[in-house]
Amino acid sequence: KEKIIEYNNFKRIGIMGGTFDPIHIGHLVIAEEIRNEFKLDKIIFIPAGNPPHKDNKKITPAKHRYIMTLLATISNPYFEVSAIEVERKGVTYTIDTIKTLREICSNDVEIYFITGADSILELHTWKNVKELLKLCNFIAATRPGFEMINLKKKIQEMNDKYGANIYTTIVTALQISSTDIRTRIKEGRTVKYLLPEMVEKYIHKNNLYR
Ligand code: ATP
Ligand code: MG
Image 1 (cartoon, protein in one colour):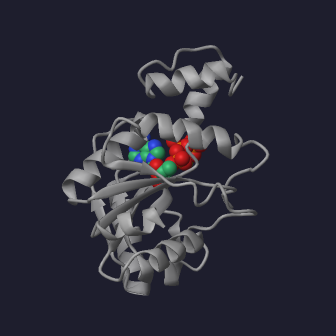
Image 2 (cartoon, rainbow, N blue to C red):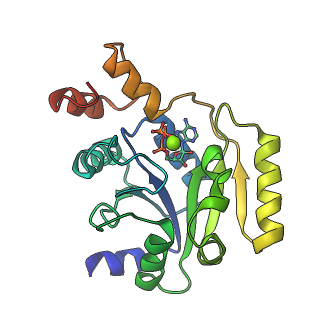
């Protein structure tokens, strides 16, 4: 209930969805730069429960991913973490999360779903994409390895087909991925400065990705 009141005090909310396995500086930089550029009141990080597009056997238990997301965002007053997806049973879809948020928030609250370029290129495969695009705006951030021209093409296609509101923005290029971080840890290589120190400590303390 408190959260409901709180969310309604903000008129422009950014949603940062991800597996966050683990969360890294790339995620934090896009969230902060987009918050600033799009004048968003809050960014809510939502770690995925059982994402449909990832091999669930290989993903780290939601509890760890949720805690790492909390640790990474704790010092930014604009950042929050929601357990809405990790608490849901079964495969979690963004459409259900956004619908729940739309029910909680009053109609004048604008929701901006933040993604990297790679996710936007796959948006057409998401569940109920047409409805999803009606319920919220999207912001696509550039990501190293994904060409701006392809991103623009995709957005044009979605706009024509669904009348979507997808914005693009150029963010500081950081060639960091969770996959690369997991590989480095497995191989005993350094991950220092690629993710917040607290997250790195949490990973080592809990023996993750070994
Ligand atoms: P994995 O390698 O496991 O897929 P990831 O680094 O891609 O991990 P996700 O949790 O899959 O991280 O990403 C969540 C969101 O953040 C996605 O929309 C993704 O495009 C975006 N993102 C992640 N890393 C970056 C980055 N370095 N630059 C821009 N966007 C990013
Ligand atoms: Mg990814």
